Length: 127
Image (cartoon, rainbow, N blue to C red; front, side, top):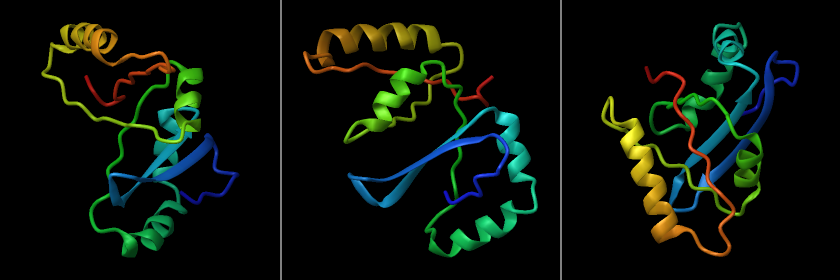
């Protein structure tokens, strides 16, 4: 995302191509709050910004908001050569059992000696 550095609340922007899907670009935009992002979306600069990138897009822009609860872990992930981002839709009311099973399975089957950690972020919009 190209943004004026004076955009209130914009802290950082990271982009990268998905190695498994070469036509997909991921952008991680770090805001100080969800309100700053919404304010920018309703600013005079947003329309021209989107109009400038839209001709290059093959589909709609998908935006997911997450509260960053483990900033050091996210920093490690963004500095890694490859960062996996998974979007998992969990049945309403099943988040706790899912997370318990996920962490148990992760420790049992995935974690190795070079493991650097994991961060799970919850969508801001999820009730």
